[in-house]
Amino acid sequence: MATEDLFVGYGVRIPAAEIEERFSTSGGPGGQHANRARTRVELRYDVAGSAALTDRQRAMLTERLGDEVTVVVDDERSQFRNRMLARERLAGRLRAALAPRRNRRATRPTAGSRRRRLEAKRRRSEIKRARRPPSGED
Image (cartoon, rainbow, N blue to C red; front, side, top):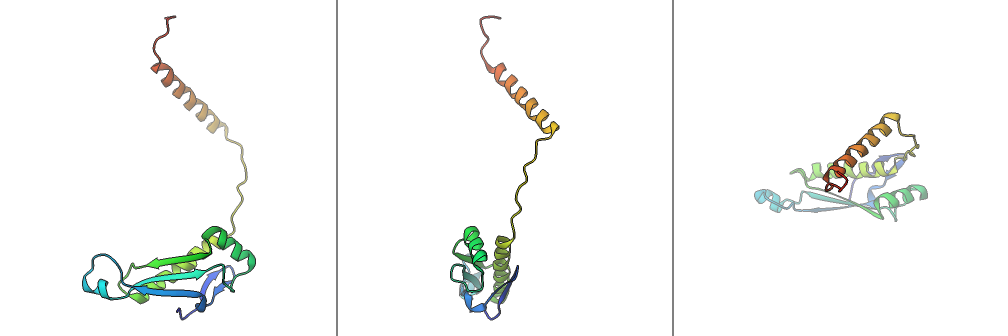
């Protein structure tokens, strides 16, 4: 269980009780330390069941990340450092999902882009025409 609340931004603070922590051994090479020390950290956050979010925030997170967000970190040899990295990554994913999306404003193609597109089509047409067998008119 996490000891501190997680500050995400956009007015969101997740209570430590809502973040589930698991520790396990890291896989791969590394000798006895990697095989025995429980330094791998897995954080789970239940978006759908969280009381820390408004309905709008919950809907945004569920749409963009799903009902549950999981972060796994085994980058460092230290469990404490991996915990800090996992909390930073979880906060970053939530912050990015809560960020307001800008609507794309439709623009017209520039004269140069139209000219380049038509020129590319002409070149491609010429290449294909050159591949055809000679017609009987020649």
